[in-house]
Every structure is written in C-alpha cells, then in structure tokens.
Length: 121
Image (cartoon, rainbow, N blue to C red; front, top):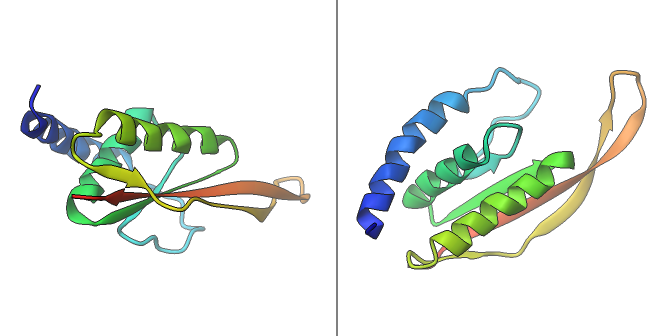
C-alpha cells in the first residue's frame, strides 16, 4: 500500500475518530489544537487523531495520566514504527504527577505523561 493511500485511509478514519472524541467532560480547561488526551477508546482512534493533527501541525502532544499512560506510549510507538517512511520522531518526554481528589474525598497522586510527536519532513 502506498503512503498516499495510507494517508487517505487515515484521513477517512479521522473523521470517524473526531465524532467519537466529542467529550462532555467540562472539568478540563480548553485544550490546544495540537493535544491528544488518551482515554479508554480503542487505540487506533488515538493513532488516527494524532496522524490527522500531524498533517496540520508540526508537533502534536499526546497526553495521558494514570492507567492510560501505557496506551499513550503505544500510540506514540505505532506512529513512529509504522509510519517511519513519512518522517516522525518523538520529542522530549515530560513526566509528572497531579493531585486528584477521589469520590471518597481522599487526595491521591496520579502520574502524567506528555509525549510530543514531531513531523521531520
């Protein structure tokens, strides 16, 4: 399959991913157009959304926290390994933690990760 037909398929799937990524969670501040927040949706939804953003932006930041961190790493690796002919690379990764109050009122630390994907070509 050529790179152009792969991109066409990805763009078609991105429209579907954009429909799935509509969220009703209003507790987060508005996100930048180049940020992808990883959650519980199928892995390829996030891969597709990231690739569509990379077509328009030179850098896309994949963000996750808690149990979604492994999924964020998987998304970044799929883009880098499977799309290596197009020219993407991983930028400096940021690790951190946030304090979150659970439903029972306890304050917990939740790990966070930010993985920038850079377009090199």
